[in-house]
Image (cartoon, rainbow, N blue to C red):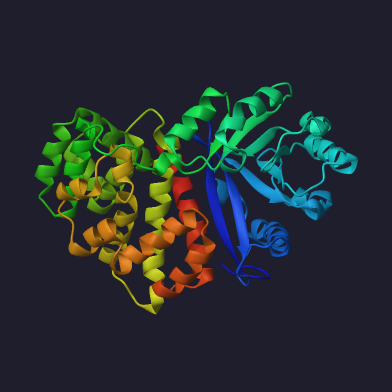
Length: 414
C-alpha cells in the first residue's frame, strides 16, 4: 500500500466506557519529517491524513466498528474536507486553541445536523462557553492538567448542560475510580494496562488450564494429551467446538468430537486461539476487553514486522514467536501475577523469555516498538524503527493489516 503525499505516524488510543469496554479510538498522527508535533505541522498532518490516508484505506480497518475521535483545527473545521469522514462514526474534537465564537458555534450546529458527533478537547470549563455546551456532545477533560481536586466542581457545573464527560490521561485505577464516582461517561488512558498490586489474586482455574494448553501447544506434545486437557475443562471444550463450527461453515457435517475439532483446526490455529482466549474468557467484557484488543493487535503487528524486518527472511516459527511475545506481554496485567511466575509455567525458548522479561534481542526491540507506538511516543518509535530494520511505510502498512486482522477475529467471535 502506498500512502499519498507526506509520510506520517499513525497512533490509535482506546476510549472506554463505564464498563471498561472500548467504544472508540482517538486517532493521532504526526508528519514524519518534523521532530516535534508543533501546531503547524500537526494541523498539516491532520488535514493530510483525512484527505489522503483515511480516504484511501478507509476507517473500517482502523476503527473496527468503533467511534473515531479526530482532532480538528479551525481551518479543517470550516472546510468541506470533513465530509469525507463517515458520518455517525466520527467524533470531531475541537482543539483547545480554537476560539469558540459565533462562527464556530454555527459551524458545529451544521456538522451536528449532518450527523457528526462533536467534542471539546482538553477543555477548561467557563460559563462564557455556554452556547457551545448546548451543541457539543462530549467534553474532554485532561485530569492531569486540571488536577483531581478541581474535578468535582467542574463536573457539577457541566451537568447543567446536555454533554457527556470524558476523562483524559487516566493512568491509574485510582484515577479511574475517582472519575467514575463523579459520573464521567468515558475514559482515555492506559490505566487498564497497568499492573495494580501484583500477586493480589491467583490465576483462576480456566486461566491455568489455558496456560497448560499453551505450554502443550508450544512443545509438540501428542494430540491425546491436548485432548485430555480439554476433557478436564468442559468450558474450554465448549468454546473450542463453537469456534471450529463457526469457521467450518460449508462443511456438510458439524464437528462432534474434541479430537476431530483439534485436528480440523490445526495446532497453529489452536495455539493462536488459546492465546486470545486467555483474555476473551477472563471476564464478561469478552471481545470488548481492552487488554484483548491491545494484545491481539500487538501480537499481529509484531508478527508482520518480524517478517518484514531488515530485508531478512524469517521462518514461520520466528513469526509465530513474535506473535506469542506480543500476546503474552500483557498476561502479567491480566492475571496480576509477575511475568517471571507466568513464564515459569510455560516452556518458552530463551529468545521469547528474554523479550518478555527484559525486552532484549530482536523480539524485545519489536515489543518495545509496539509499546511505544501504542502510547504514541513517536520520537521513540522513530529511533526503534532504525534498530528493528523497519521503514515507516512498512510500519503503517503493518498497523493497518493488524487492525484489519483483529477486526475479522472479532467478527468470528461474535
